[in-house]
Image 1 (cartoon, helix red, strand yellow):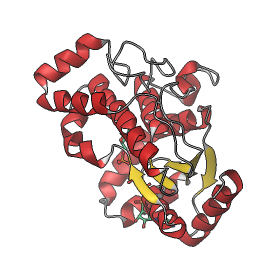
Image 2 (cartoon, rainbow, N blue to C red):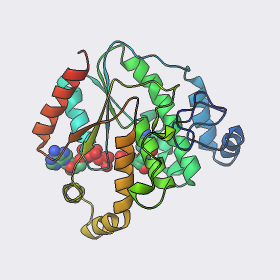
Image 3 (cartoon, rainbow, N blue to C red):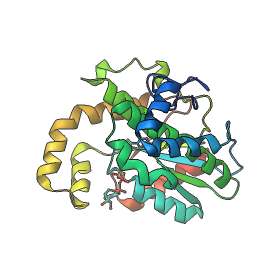
Image 4 (tube, rainbow, N blue to C red):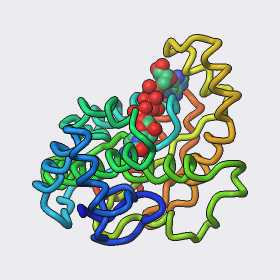
Length: 254
Ligand SMILES: Nc1ncnc2c1ncn2[C@@H]1O[C@H](COP(=O)(O)OP(=O)(O)OP(=O)(O)O)[C@@H](O)[C@H]1O
Ligand SMILES: Nc1ccn([C@H]2C[C@H](O)[C@@H](COP(=O)(O)O)O2)c(=O)n1
């Protein structure tokens, strides 16, 4: 087994004898490594990361949200303004394997992202001794997308608000602040469009995945310890940056 899990159904279990991401135990990680060579390399990297990583003295701020809500844009600006270090998830050292795991069944795909969070924790621990750390997605993304994938139907069908699936894993380094960027669905589609997605594909995505996106966003809102602080990211880039910097100054010692 590897680490605690960081995703449904085992969110919150500490150092559980199961691989990251809620796979079915050590056997699956071995099976994965036998069938997918990259899984072996991933597990090797994970095993090299010290357990129970500790944060340095600088603040660690995570940005979460659906695609095209502006995470890349705002994380880059915050990093520049604060002279910080920008990290993203999955971390660069495993991102070359992302497409391989994205094509695998959900538990294996999820295990890849969950393992990535623990590898990222090592990078956060080191970087936060040097400068403020700004992160584009972390554990809340893995958990929220997993929950929204596992549960079909409406927001009302999600596990109840106090369920342990919304708890941060005990053995994963915690950030100081998590900001959830939200924009209304129409604005989000416009941003996708401006970024170059074809209109027809946008419409298909909007129709097919409207309930899925609602489940992801509601799951984010139910996360605790740390909870996500919601930021309306609909205003201009400059205004969003101003709001975000105010929140960081309010919640973190810079
Ligand atoms: N506040 C804003 N107002 C208008 N457009 C914005 C704003 N923030 C970002 N955009 C534009 O919206 C598009 C999506 O932004 P961005 O790539 O930063 O989102 P993202 O959340 O990182 O997406 P993904 O998760 O898919 O990588 C980009 O074209 C970007 O220039
Ligand atoms: N820590 C993470 C990061 C990403 N994911 C998954 C969730 C989505 O399927 C996808 C979004 O990533 P993006 O397109 O914004 O790079 O990746 C995750 O589960 N955990």
